Length: 181
Image (cartoon, rainbow, N blue to C red; front, side):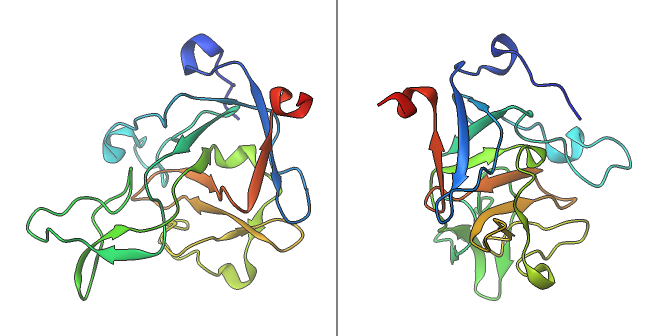
């Protein structure tokens, strides 16, 4: 388990936030500190230790960041097929029979280190968890709260990022600031 970075090295704001299931109120994470932006991951191939089946985690344990760009399913065909871009941040090019696609998924997902959310479990029969070395995160929510509510998407395949995205509608956050109000 990696150490939580201090505020000076991780860029956290110092406020602690806990995320909960919106359906049942189950605590999904411990106290986490907010990062100002999702960290940049070096070229995923360069960042992966030799022989590793996952990239290093996008977010350090103990921190979280908000992904402001669309992330995850569904995907739509990109207008510019001559100069395609990855379908979502930290992703690789993705194509269907119709051409290269871009994410039309939800914005403002909460990106955390996968080990910071031990409660969510894979869906039955590993639904939405296709990938070669782990789920690639492109098929939609693939992690559920113990109550059964789908709350997150794990991306942990060998060719993409290693991160967990909490759905901003299916989860909610409490910080000391919001708890006082």
